[in-house]
Image 1 (cartoon, rainbow, N blue to C red):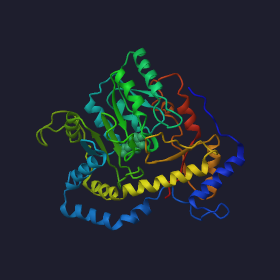
Image 2 (image 1 turned 90 degrees about the horizontal axis):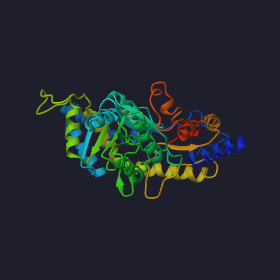
Image 3 (image 1 turned 45 degrees about the horizontal axis):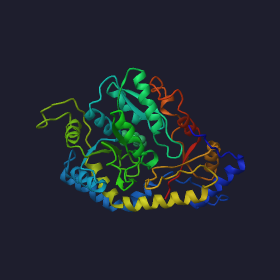
Image 4 (image 1 turned 90 degrees about the vertical axis):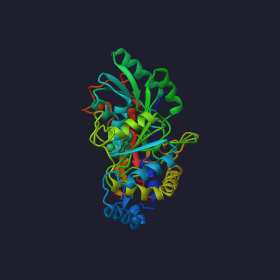
Length: 387
Ligand SMILES: *Cc1c(COP(=O)(O)O)cnc(C)c1O
């Protein structure tokens, strides 16, 4: 494990960081706004496309096909075109997307699935749904993403515990694709499938290829706060595999076979509402422009904070959609408090690594300690993406 460099230069440092963040967001530090700024500006985004969203929702009310209406199929078509993936299966949310993937991959009780500890709970949560065991791996400090060495250690841990390691779920945390060129060979060497949790990274690019095409299955979420969000719950799955796509389409509707009342497998009700598909279609129209604006804000943060805090790095050949702009600093809590005094919100993702959560403490970890996940939970601070 590389030594973790810290950036602790005391309270002066904290004040300078806060002044610099104020500068980026156009807040006068001596004259903070009466109302705190929003952490993200979903209202402003809606204002931009309100007439189009109203019209799209009205169209759904008029045709009345609330379940699997034409907008659902149109969205799947457009998301395939956007990503270059052969199949897109829209679904109820990003968590169900992961579950549908695991079901289609045939995960069985007693199997082990490797997941990063530094992620949102949903990544691990779906694994015990199928009676399988999540094994928590560590992440890399510079990218927040799964560490291939820890993945290797996790496979060894599974063996030692007498579990069959069947797959790995890398997460593209905060919008940046994981290091697939390093992870895929490890997975291949141990005969693991790879399903990427791209809930935060839809729209990002890895060495010329779009998220959605980087693993056997990729899943995403349209939760309102994600870079491409709807106005409720929603999600989607991407794959180039015809058989997996067919099975997941069936699983999404109670394991349906030839028709609605033919059930050929145990499935779930995991469809995307037509209304939400209509919303995502409108959001997609301004998505590319929004990504440019998010990136401009990230560049401004980077310029302002370089040398003052550990700023996120985007590896050569990759893009991120900046689901979060996350810095690391030993005085994270002091920065957050001080920012709030200036009317600037921030957020901590994630306060606790998953292997410390009450629900997940009983499951194995790849190595006795996961030091980077622990460190990041104490030092990471996500800054306002108020564009
Ligand atoms: C948001 C998120 C999910 C779950 O998506 P929902 O649509 O809220 O179910 C899964 N994994 C990660 C990493 C997420 O950020």
